[in-house]
Every structure is written in structure tokens, then in C-alpha cells.
Image 1 (spheres, rainbow, N blue to C red):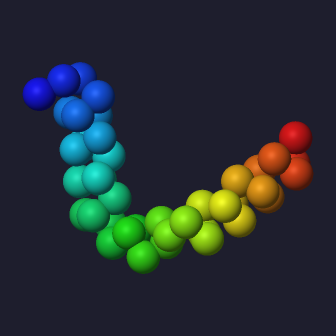
Image 2 (image 1 turned 90 degrees about the vertical axis):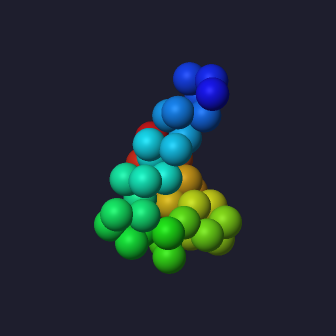
Length: 40
């Protein structure tokens, strides 16, 4: 397993422990990115 795979697994485990997967749709990520970019 590479470092990237380990990091990805750790991030997904963190997300799944908190039931955040429901907020990680393409639409939601695009909206959040737009808001953050607007703040810059």
C-alpha cells in the first residue's frame, strides 16, 4: 500500500465515523468550493 492509499483510507475512515458521506456529493463539494473561492 502506498502512502496516498493509507492517507485516503484514513480520511475515509474519519469521514465514515462521523457519517459525513451524505455531505460529500459532487454537487455539495462544488457549492462549497464556490463559496470558499468567493471569500478569497
